[in-house]
Length: 535
Image (cartoon, rainbow, N blue to C red):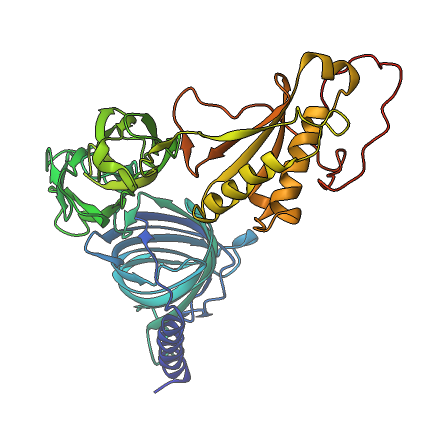
């Protein structure tokens, strides 16, 4: 076997090995592929063949054109039709050859985002036209591969294309031992990608509006498909795990959430292109939440907080609902007569409530979720007390001793001693001592009535045999009257209607008490202007 026969076989093995090693590199997943590609580029040919006048020289002037159509269900595999023309005849009838190739076959291309290697096998015919010899059409078989750089989806650059092409030419000299041409064709140029297969599965996006609702409020859901053929009619199918759909086979639907418990739910849509068998559907979910309703917030206040029997108190409720839903109101009470009026109520105490505390409860309920909250207000009803009457306990006169008109004389002493014994038997209540001054005395001694009441108290608490508690005795000035002091016992409790204590309270820090044994005061010769009794 000649050297020329061995070399092409080695070259062929190297080409196949490099092509498959390059294919191993091409592992990235692609989602699209051209349907067709048209290649046009420069071609260099090494004929590697002999004719009668010797070995055919390399042909540097050439061009290659090929068209490849890839199968729809096998995007990497395509049918290729290839043709190239190589002109090797020089000027002045230099030895050379013209070679034309027309072949068809299969091409397998590893479509990748950047570098796309390919291998191919073709068969066809070779037009061989050596100089000075006759031209012939001969069968040709080709094996090759190459590498494309993807610079733009419609256009790629073929960095290298390598083909081993076998054919033969039998116009030989006797010295030649073989008529095989083991040609090597190298080419580079531009690839135009026409049409596209797309393996990106369609997608779907679902939305819910609004995404948070109260139970009973509607949720509108919508689905949108991406990557579907816009010329095809799509079908829709909805399902939900919360509420009821008004329709299940349209692009948009409404979910009725009546009766759905608080929580997270979704409406799921499936979009399908029935005209396709593969990659023809997509699903999505529209999520929404049924919110947990909150009970109303309420507070109650009573005005006034203490009432007597038959008196009213107004109870006011302040209520708000976090959801803004309408509220209804209810009132109850542990006693009294209650008259509700929306957010307020009137409580009137009865005889049975005397001495008790009435609790009034207000309840606010929202009309949708039936959630309630209540508040309370307390109203005190004091016990009913019997009124008391002021008792007249007699008097003392100061007429017998003009020199000491304030002195407690013996007659008054006897009266006071009896009165002290009576007061000892009456531990509750107090004694009002009201001192009076007659008209004439008022001119001469403006504080004489107050002095008399203070002196009587001094006897009852200090001079007398029965010493009473000073805190139970109140000196009072009664103004004009007789020369006397009157004694009034005021029982403990509420005075009956219309009763008041007589006179005005004497300031005991200003009117000092005098014992009944004290010497007489010197009387002023001239009368002083009258003045009201000291308060």
